Every structure is written in structure tokens, then in C-alpha cells.
Amino acid sequence: MTIKIAITNQKGGVGKTTTAVNLAAALSKAKRKVLLIDIDAQSNATSAAGISKNDCESLYEHFELKDKIDKYILDASGGYKIIPANPNLVATEKIIENTKEREKFFSKNLKLAKDYDYILVDCPPSLNLLTINAMEYCGSVLVPVQCEYYALEGLVTLKSTIEQLNDSRGLKIEIAAILRTMADWRNRLTREVSGQLEKHFKSKVLNTIIPRNVRLAEAPSYGQSIVDYDIKSIGGEAFLSLSGEFIRRFEHAKKKSA
Image (cartoon, rainbow, N blue to C red; front, side):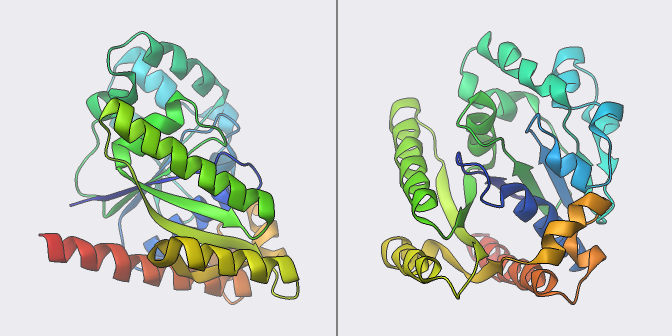
């Protein structure tokens, strides 16, 4: 059974794409078969995977042309597979708007092979129809949260929005995990926000914390993940730790429910 997770936070600049790309690569290093789907028209996850957004097709072309999904799945530099994004993705909302049960368009029209261990979806920094579809398609949401006040506020807003969608549309979306990112423990605010997250969201907060790290920031400019660019950096070690925590948390839970 494939573990599907939408990675989202409507606040930009919280390390969402960094999380998606490096988690995909780290899980691949752990011998997991991973597919990353980039549904952000900015295409940052696509670029970080070593693919030019101007030379690829995206889910927009798949839904528009109604052809086989396999032709859109490419090899990423990090050892995982990726369905890339391009600027045309913004037009996908127009396709979705003209259908019934708009929130379930992905579930009805995105037919992927079941032999992936993980399908990760990198969402745009907004709660648009693409993001809502990704959350409904996956059912589980990973929220990267920068350790600052406004990011915490954004998490509360996202939680409320998901609850409203579930109640009004009969969906079953849950925040499965919260990841603290861009942490600097010398900063008092980092420690305070981290404490608030642990207090209010308890078991949802992952133990792994992604630090601020120059090597982590450099890696995308080389079209590489941190575990390929500098696996021994503190950023590389953090994402290896995160992949291990993911395996323990999600795969063990899957075995128990089987």
C-alpha cells in the first residue's frame, strides 16, 4: 500500500519545497520507491530535481490531453521519480472548475501505479484547488513550519480550513505530521515557537528538526538534493534522520492497520 502525503503550508518561505525534494531523496537512499509530484507552477521542486521547467510537461498537459501518466514521470537527480511542474499548471484550475466534485478531481483522474512506497506532493503556497485536490488525494498532510510567530499562525489557519473542508465537503483530510524547519536554537523565538508546537499539537510534531544550513540552501542551485550534495552536512544528517522517522511512523502504522 502506497503512503501518500501532501506537503503544504499556505505561508511561503517555510521550507516546503526543500522538505519535499530532500525527503524524497533521503527516502530513496533508504531503498524506498518514491514519486514526487510538483504542482507548484513556480516549479522549484522540478528545478531542484535537475529538470528545466521550460523543457518538461506537467499534470496540466496530462489532464488536458488525457494521455497516459507514465510519459510525464521522469528520473530526478536524487534517485526518485518526479512528475515535474511548468508554468502551464496555473491553467489546471480551469479544467478542475468545470467538473463535478471539484475537490476530488485528482482522485478520479490521476491514476498512478501502486508499486510506489511513497507519493509526495509539493503544493503551491496557497489553498487553491490544486492544493485542496492534493490534500484530498493523499488524505494525509505534512506541514513544514518555520519556527517563527507568523508560521505558527498559518498552521492554525490551515488546521481550521481542513476541518471546514472535511465538514462541508465530506472529506477525510488529516494533518499527519508537523515538521519544524529553518531552526536556529540560538534564537529565543525558535525555542518558544517549538515549545508551543509541542504543547498544542503533541504527537503530530516530528522529533526531527531541520536546521538553518548554508549547504542545504546551496544544493538546489546545483540541481541536487542535500543528501547528494553534502550528505555529511547538518542539513544532510537532518533529512536522513527525517526519512528514518517517516519509515518508523508511517510504515509501521501501515503494518498495524493491515
